[in-house]
Length: 423
Image (tube, rainbow, N blue to C red; front, side, top):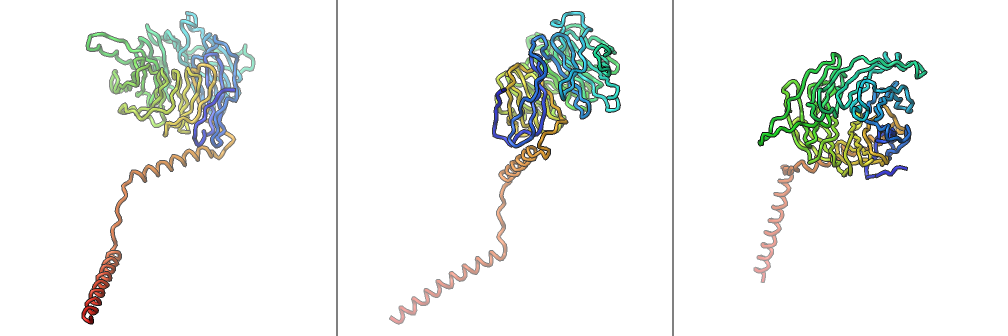
């Protein structure tokens, strides 16, 4: 059984996550949403084989007929059912001319379509290799037999002339894509026309006149509706904000610790990004000004390779080379739970349409109640307490008390004077 780490927390909401490791295994982690429940491994798909290591994965997260695409080290691309792990189709990346070891797939995206097109049982897949060979293909798996499955390569193009592509990302509208890497400046492509529309400028020489080329390790768009703004992480522990409508050099650039940036993820607000580096540090930044919002509490002992943000709940998941998948609360930046999965992990994705046994979402309600209570307490502590103004009645009462005391003193004095006269 996998080891789990529990912390004091109201509990995880009902969630379902899929993880991918270096032995080619796909593991399903679920939490039913009960109070103080730890996510557990409920399924494992595949057999351990290092030649089938998962290099990239893409999930079409929809309620009906979801799809999962997995790119493996041996050059195979598999399209699975993310609900039960059944294999729809397995194809070979036959566009490259070099062996898979020299030109492995580094990025992949499975295009989502409307529900009316699901009856055709087709999907469109975009893949890019390390040498910059990008291809978009249409896969038809409507037939039950694997022999009748047709794969048509629609478009192919070259992303770069030299260098190695290390990261790629497709925007929310699925019309533009980002590519970047070692010796490859980050560039934007129009997927409908397969044309390059923007390329970043190379950095300037330093004070000694030495030119150091940038190595991009991860990229992400800031918003699903805007393809013009995106963030990029480099091997020189730098995070850069680009705006293709403004200029070709970074608009904002800031450093994070002293190790390469390995993973980036955007928040739903479009202003916050989550950054993970090679030493296991995880933090959130306001990308508008580069301000550090805070680091997530709980040290990871290995490089972070993937960060996923839940579409509904304020939770992110991170995984990496320490073989743990961790779930964090975005607002408090506290560790909710961690599950040990034995192998080095390469990626994690959320299934947002999962509904646990606890349909009332008591765990979510308790988390929200705790957040509201903490906010009210903090507001009460920070608000200065005003002195109450004395009312007129209180002033008159004090005057009456003072007058009665003076009358008593006068009576005592007069009584003492009469006694002395009598004597």
